[in-house]
Image (cartoon, rainbow, N blue to C red; front, side, top):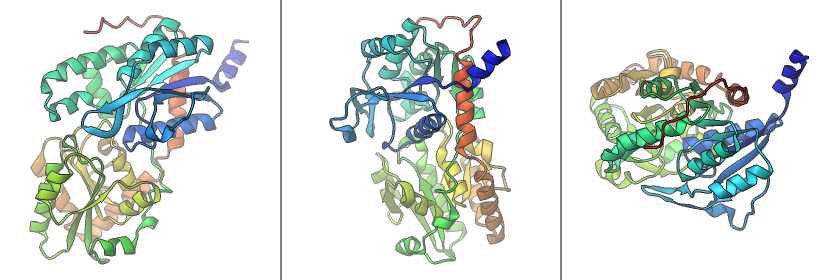
Length: 400
């Protein structure tokens, strides 16, 4: 009988509430990841309730059993993104009437905190996700003094859940080093049908002023201080000096507060702005070398997207790059903080056309095996584990 009950439990559908302060059509790695997880769980027959701030595209959209909209306000320094306002009483009332089996909280802002509080009162199991290094971002926006306070809050928040899901092995190790408890791995996947070398566009490359044998050095992401883009500038200038005979163009896809500064440093760079869907895939595939100098990523979805698009990728040996790139085989890596090593890795990729061709092919082959289905399966397994009786989870210390 016990075995039969276990079998039923393992295949029964769940009622899952997912709380986030960002979701598509907002453009960022967190929103993209959560959309994949939500769609994947729904395809598996689970009932998903999404709790998020109201977006401009929602207009007069009303709450229902699948969607709970809350108020939000702009996130300083992040145009188009917002914090979710605390909604503790609203969520408590709704969940008391229709109690979710498990709660997944993806963001730690006021909305996430209020969801955690309501879940604790109702004894709903909570799984949290560590998606963004906000404690690192504070130093880039003139608030370094807050770094310790933010770290203490994040530790308290995540230690209040039954487990915290980290997107990369390096992030998991870093959290455990900072005394985050019950940290598990939930990596990321890539849509290798969308991000595909076949999307390469000769017409787009001609717009950039590039012929078939010329080199497009591309970066995709938010143009902001935490992305370490001044190193991108230095790297591109070094490539120009090392290979003066080659026609190199720097292509920047994305937008953000550092755009004007980057334009001043690199007036000949091509700024493509925000791209989505097929157009984004075409921009990736029309590049040759992908330069990703960020040191603040919990994962870095763009690394897998670039690999899937058949680009030669240079990145620091952490997060997604550490998991998916083997130096010299399917990309080039530098030790974190080693700026000269990063520049040399980029130069190495352009040293020999045959080596670059081999690296790009290997990168595509690796990324094509990193689908979302296995990630959603693991996410579902983590959520089911959170339902199991817990012998003892020490109460998190009072919020500092």
